[in-house]
Length: 329
Image (cartoon, rainbow, N blue to C red; front, side):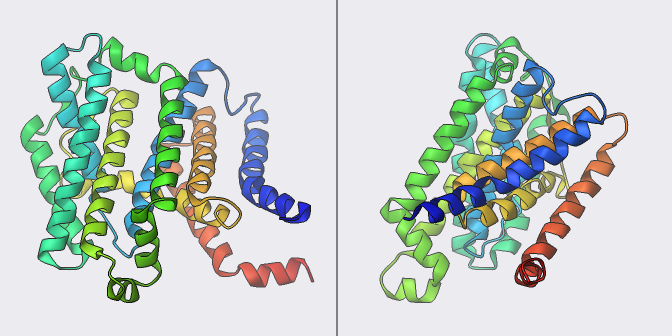
């Protein structure tokens, strides 16, 4: 590749994060602050990057194959509840309970994802309908386990606090998830089949690719990833809401829409998963900026701003060629 081509890829990969940083840092400086003010805010920054990146990867896996999955949030919450209950029963919130909860939550997420995928494969109805039914089932199970209450004792301990009290563990998980998903989806037989099905399902099936097996693996991977998200949310919030009925858990999924589109745009110049990481960094910078302006911007205003940014970015994507002609005329 020529030097010009390499430079174009580097600029295209990092231009959005750099622009976002300059704009948000400027806003924070207007108040005499920075996006990241101290070591604690940096820890929170990295943890939020992990949550957004992993959620975005999980959402994109099925969505890119035409399977819209509403059950991601319920899988995250239910797997976290299962992990919290089991780890507390074994360690009582003492040393080692965070690691135990992490492992159990991932396993629970994998099983919940496999169950969700199996229901979709067996019923043979549109995945969006299946996911809505699975969401209601998982929310009902959550409510039954917790009696509709918040779990607090199980996750409010020094072991859990220590896990999110430093950026190192979150950074390690970010790297592991990034490497594993890149290898799995870009350099294995499963990944080749997945990309072939994504590009042309009917032709791929006719060539011998097993769609059902591939779909089950995708759902299982999504469940494991959302188990990680459930663990991070539980450690970060120090509570788990067990009363999320009537699709109350779906909100987790919507945090990934804007970074998914941003990451997909960045993937023109880089790997898609790297794009999701950079998009998650952008969202974490925005979240840190909201923290700086916490007295001026309420939670509802944050949701409105995120929605407006998503709409603006989609408008740009749909009119990109026209805008390029206008500005480069």
